[in-house]
Length: 519
Image (cartoon, rainbow, N blue to C red; front, side, top):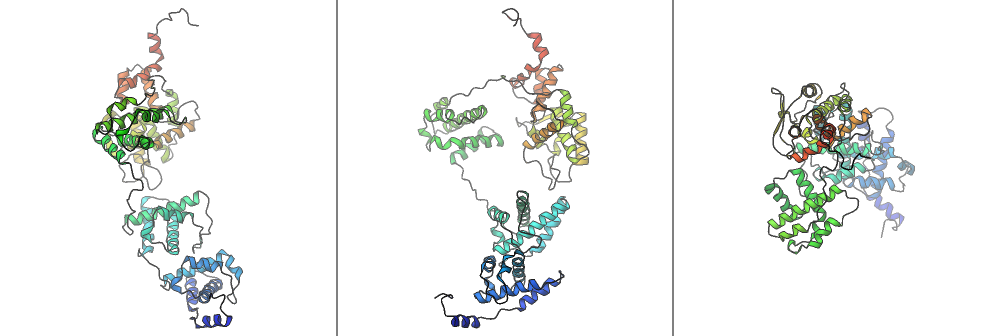
């Protein structure tokens, strides 16, 4: 028989038998608030007494109180004597109840499992750590605030620190905040507010893991790679000397159609191989189709070398048209290049850094990846030489450092580069002063510089400077061999495309039209 169906006299008897609520806890809560707050605090005491009264009527012990119990209290049909149901509709009132619960947890009236001790000390050390990294005052305040918010939310949610992973952090980011923190109002700015929560929570969790305060995240792979692709990866690395970036692209392409070939390489047939190349989505570009052809041939060559498939199947891959020298390199005039370089604002650290990057691209024809990987040890100041150790050919190359590029690089290192212990030359200008995530961010710097000048009709990638340098050299009288040396081309055929932009040279070798005057 439920409590609702029991006789009224029996219900009253059972309530009288239950221990009376300890209202002294509410008084102690009130005294704790007076130590740092002023003004009328009767509502705080009233909310605490109301909650204790409801716990008594519901026969819920203090040891069982958690966020779920507070939610039940917020939804109950209030028949708690002098208290009113409308009070439960206000978030401020429920916030006082949650603050009372936190007070009881701090006094160990409500037992909470703690797998990290001295969390307040960790919070203070986290704030000092952010200051050491050079974060602005506003960023430090934001990170510290969200770290404190995470501490309260984990305690209310009864989630242990050792169980925190990306899924738990996302739950924290998306939760409808009713946490007993006065500055939290339950409303978050769409987009930036969620990003701020996520950034602060991850920063504090990473800090605790680096201190070994909580165990590291599990390293178990969430994605199980096909065993054949794993062997393909090793073969590319050991027997072909392929770079890590190329291996990543090859495996990404192979994973698209590896299952279509079938589980047993001995049963591969020419029809299936041709279908992989020919039956592709119309949205895929010519370059993507050529990538499919290249990777499929290399993959079949790998399998045949292992003795798992017939070697003649390599010839079943249909060719993809590659018309070499069919297009002209897109370039800009020297005047346009100088306008792009001069668009950098040298009164800001960003402008000083970007100008050094643009000058290295323009004067030496570097690739975006060369600038991205450039290390402090790669600059030989005594001999004015730049050593490139991580290029496409994976062979170290020494290039002379022009005066203006060297001056811009020195200005960046002495005036604008953040004080960080990073080996990379170019860093972000905001804390924590890390290197760029990839070479694509160098291309983004070029695109923004072009946009500032308002120039239209020129490409926005970093290769703009590379093509423009080669074109200017040829028009200035340099031969293709010199251009290939500066651009570090392994094949003369790669440099030959720039011969088509030397109009003066082409006019000298042009033959008369056999059909008479050209129309």
